[in-house]
Image (cartoon, rainbow, N blue to C red; front, side, top):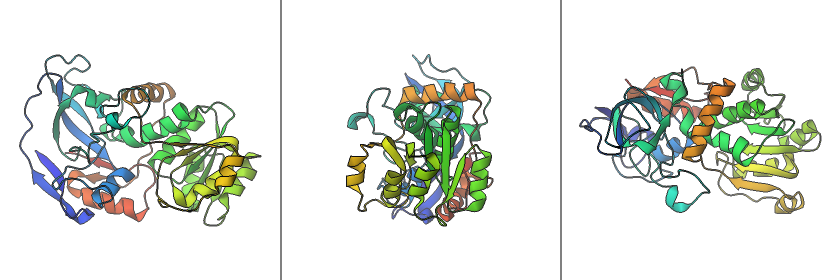
Length: 336
């Protein structure tokens, strides 16, 4: 089978095409899946560029979508021909986060989905939404589930709430879509006027260009009439101060990413005085993924996918496109 492997020292240029043996037939409790698509996440970029060390020769990519070709003894969840998607934390079935259940992440702790075939335990997958293309399905395991957990599970957003999303990456756009589906008002930020207009077309109610308005936290507070209920924080240390300013008293900040830095001074006094709740979020559980899929089918939400498409062979170019920041929504890769 064709695959892409990451070699040392880790970098985009260290991604190499490889011909690997067919993984064979599934054993008891396993499924064989022919993969048709994957999608890029910031997590994958960090792995590829060396921010998360991994073994030499690792197959990258945490998201995978495909079709079950064979099932092993004892597997009842899937049949041959089923469309399936991977699970970011295969062993985190349900419950609160724990170190033991948040391992074996495809693409860093274990080989990922930049390949044509995989044989793995059946619980490493869930069913895909009905009627979706493989490319659409591949956008869900990391970005969509992270947004779902931030907005619905931890944020408990309800009609009338106000949600602030940052930028136009996969997590932020899914968060916008989920928040609107829950009846919330959404404030969106970006440094691009063109991207802000596209976010408006997706349902954003208030737009803030943070390049023109550096103190965007206070602008969001003013636009919301006293502060937002939830901030979907993807910037990290570099934007947390503004998120704290934007939040209402008793509000919630879902801390998801570190795009704007890992360490920075924070206005902890304001954090305390506002009695804010900050929740660190890294994707979600097997059960939450299944619940999200049911919600996607019920609401009709579909992923926003960047217009530039890539193949397995051009995966390095996909990462370069991601690094440029020119994309809008998820970057998809088709696996032939």
